[in-house]
Length: 193
Image (cartoon, rainbow, N blue to C red; front, side, top):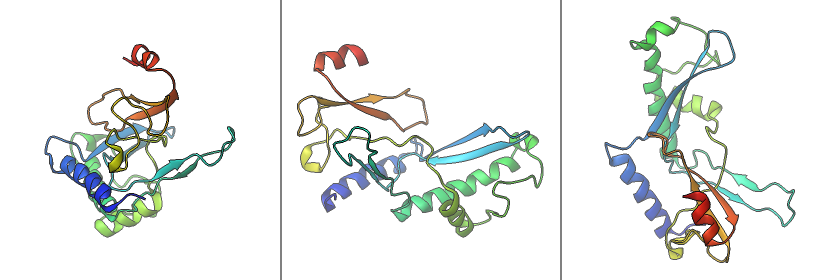
């Protein structure tokens, strides 16, 4: 479990992003789904306050890891997402998107109406799903701050286990994927630059 100092450090970093008017607190998207004449609108939080974990469960290669995403374990995430969802609800009513939406068209799930913060929270509690494949992240900070990789991307306590950032550097897409692999520094340098 993180210490109070580690949590404060993390929360301060997230808060700095949220306070910066040049940073995105969420990404909103529109996609066409396999159903005829159906558009899906979605929102995902850029940097959640909630933090889950992924851990190796056993030494057996075929065993699944223990994954606990801890969605909405910090109530600020639910509050931020509810506000983003209320904003997203306005998109089909606003030009030029309104031309592509049928007035009072079918919703999935059809029984839920989002009209205020409370209904947005309830909708999220019942329907929110992960927007990316779960993967671990490894902040590159000092070990005493509770983090796991050093400035050379070596996992603390190992000799050759390294993490590598994989990102398309797409604007508005703050989620980066990292892989850990066993290898020499030279391999890392020429394969991933």
